[in-house]
Image (tube, rainbow, N blue to C red; front, side, top):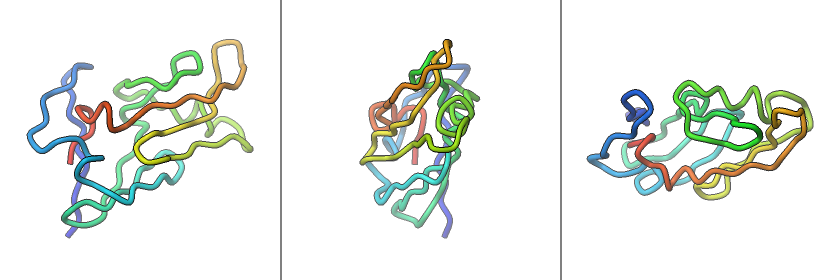
Length: 115
């Protein structure tokens, strides 16, 4: 059975989750480019983080349709993103064209991602 991670936002405000954040429910999370793959109780699922993350002057931020990847590691070869537990880290460009290591805890903001 294929499950889904669901974007839970109206405008840019998070909604209350009925089940809880995906990091509480889904384990064995891994990152492939901008897609997070997770093993949840009903099976494996994937979600494109570009739908909810943006790059704000070299910082990773929650932003609906933010397309973070093109302003971070996807912008140049040799730059990386990785996932350690629920923390996403990426090389991201600031407004002056300088690279910074930026992190965001996907578990803290489970309101945007729900299982």
